[in-house]
Amino acid sequence: MTIKEGNSTIAIRMYDGEDFMKSLTTACKNYKIESAVFTGIGMFRSVEIGYWNGHEYVKKVFDGLTEIVSLQGNISVTEREGDLVIHVHTAIALHDYSVVGGHLVNAIMYNGEIFIERLHNITLLRRDEPTGLKGLNPA
Image (cartoon, rainbow, N blue to C red; front, side, top):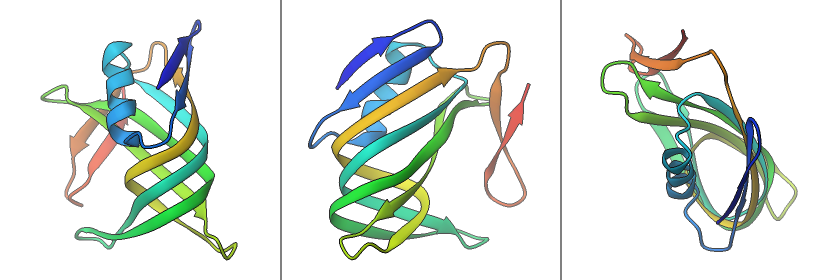
């Protein structure tokens, strides 16, 4: 992973074989990012995507190279513990040109270009909600 920090933007290049969530978490901790939005492009070598059925995430793994059509999310912390939460949605193009998407559970990168934009004077907090999800609460 290569990282360059600007005034409020952090550019990250991820390389083949890197774990997306671990790499992004490491970057957030190293650069003290707790409230931000991000976007990215590139390719996954393997990706696990899920959707919330009202009770749990139903997950599916896609092995093999896929093109990232959309990758966006936010970075926040839990209200009580202050734990980092990275919430990501993605859409990927498969080899047959079909597109699938949902909540990104985990991914192994082939290559990636990620841009994180810090949110100044906004704190993104996650709280437990009756739905079973941790809802976003800007403060």
